[in-house]
Image (cartoon, rainbow over all chains, first blue to last red; front, side, top):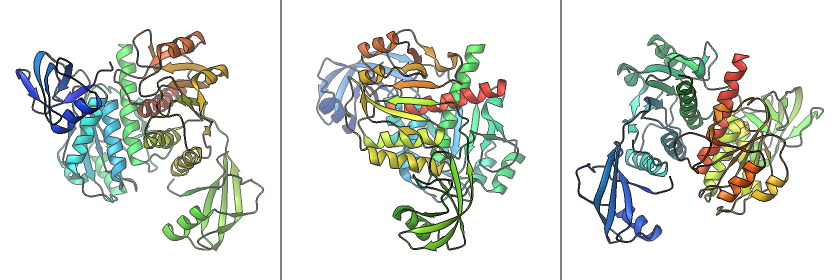
Length: 242
Length: 242
């Protein structure tokens, strides 16, 4: 599927017409050189695929009228990554883009004891997610939660199958040794200096399983992406075995 | 293992002393604040782990004397990624860094029919590989081959198990369905506009198996990283099953 996908957050299936924002309108007219009569495909990031025909091509607000819509069903099992944002903003953005492409359903940025970055530009981050969604032609935007401290996050008592990926010595198992990966999964990924011993202990006391993502020392953002990719691969295998 | 690893390309096990280059010397003295008497660990990217004691800390050339050396054996099965460099240099650098971290043994940049980027700054790219190696604490630097055309590459008649990952319709199998992934593997990854039909046909005529990396449309650099991560995961599983 090589067609371009657009994003409009508040689009509803019953909407008969649509106006795209200025950035997307510019891209559509200047880069893709779309003209009235051409089709466009738009999603709201909640499963909607809205197919329309372009009616007006003002470079600031392209308009379109509805032809048909499809409401997709999210068949993918939930994957939630709670990650300490790396010091470099670029690396966080890169994680968000790749995690969205590969497939993640929820991301929570967490502040840990060894975190150097304690703020995030949420708007900018949300934009990156939308970019990853459009680029990979998907219809479900990952949920991006506000930045929260490690302790507050544990207190939310997450309902998913819980794992913590850390680099310290100690009992750990490989991700592929975890049973029933098709249930909702939550994986914690630590900052550059890793989780503190206390944090690991606290997580384990709250039924998190300590896991390893391989024998190498991975950067934070690489660990996040490898976790997404491993889960996708293992789920793909188990689906095929059923 | 949180100790810092340094790189010196021409270092040999029998070298009794070592002088680090200006960039690494500066990092060692200014950032890590190492002093004479401190230990450093240096690799040549060919399996050598050289442990030394710092003898001089001129910010431009740190010197050290040998304490002991270990020659590591590369136990990882070869993984060769031949990839069309993305238009954006940044994205190529991300791929190189992450592929090195996750574990790749050889990278060949290829020029395809739909390639927009036809040159590469090889020195800069090599530096990124070294950075990834040091950061992930590994001792084997991936081999980075010169840029070559798709056709010339096929003519080299690669000896590995051959796969081509493309996004076109047609018969494809998932990577996990490939047998004996513990042999040397070669995976071709196409440019932003994908391989051309002719290129795919030519590869298949030369015993490449067409594979899929998942149901999403991945960017070139994401596909490259996902390929590395999938191979690592599948080899990890098969090793455990033996």
